[in-house]
Length: 466
Image (cartoon, rainbow, N blue to C red; front, side):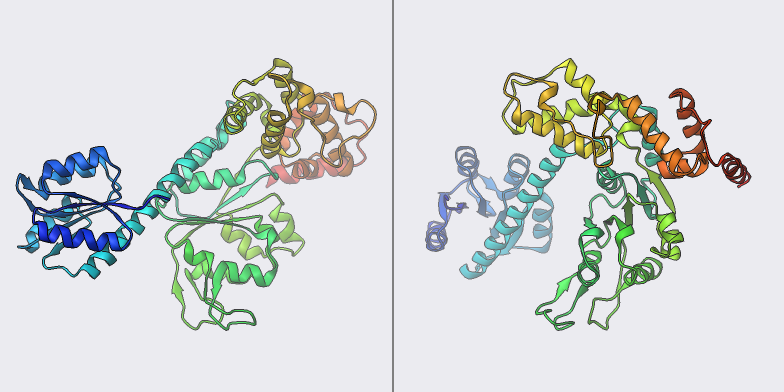
């Protein structure tokens, strides 16, 4: 890797020689200049990582250079030196973009420390910039499509994104809950602060507790150093707890206390710390049902469900599938260097008619696999390798079922499981009763074999009265 290049702009040859020799001893490459014009040319012809400039030069001052340098090379640290420094001059230099303003004589060791710190800040800035570019390129619009379901979700999200209240995102696995959570953060007043996410299903009680709250050294066996918890990392930002329904019951009261009191304590610590974070939670499970089963605390459920947003599964927005598929295809084809590939009309038809039990995540994986395995210049239906999820039909001509056939079969099974009770079947399917009645009508489902029609009517009456 090439050496870091430092421009030294100094008209006093003795000072310039001493500073350049010292920087070279620290393994920097040095470009020596003695005028404002020389500094401009050195920036144009080379690629400096930092510059140490004397304030007063034969053809002007460093302040004359700062607007040009900061506009053309905003990430390059600039350190100004002067023999007659004043507070007013220092303030003006910093306002114009100087990173440091030092009065001569300056110890060479001090310049080395300041330079090293400035270059470290530059690296961090570049990493953050690269990360933002990558995030923007890889980001997925959670509202991509024209279906009524996704437009309704977009309108609801727009109304609540500026609120600081907790948000609970409900939806099936792979439907885009994490993407929506990130959108809520990016479109909130906390957008410039940290966004921290954690999948609660992937941790046991002890590990989840220390991940969330952190611990002090010696708090338990194996705690050989202090650990900062994710709540602390997310200070003033947002924390996204995915699959919160899988959170251990012993941790839930601690989370509730944090949300109510806005304070927390690391494991093994006696000091309480103030907390200012927005909680965004998500679950593919019915948390209300978990509360009834005493698997989730009711007080925590009511605290996190101030606003509940439901992300529709892909099968309820089939008209959006071509748009989503095309976007995934274009990005993946570029990443994998297969720009010559195209999607056939037969592929789009197959994608639209598929039931997508794995939702958007499955769609993306299917497209990526097809781009990788396609042997010709056009992706064909056989390249998709579509499969039904576990529990779907596995014999006969089921591989040729249309989306309507799959929806009809799925609703029939839910009705059979609930003995014909439409209210309970609607809850099982994650849709409203009116939507289910409409589906039954449009799909031509026969209810004459319902075994619990009276129960259905009672349930419907109870639902109406509530």
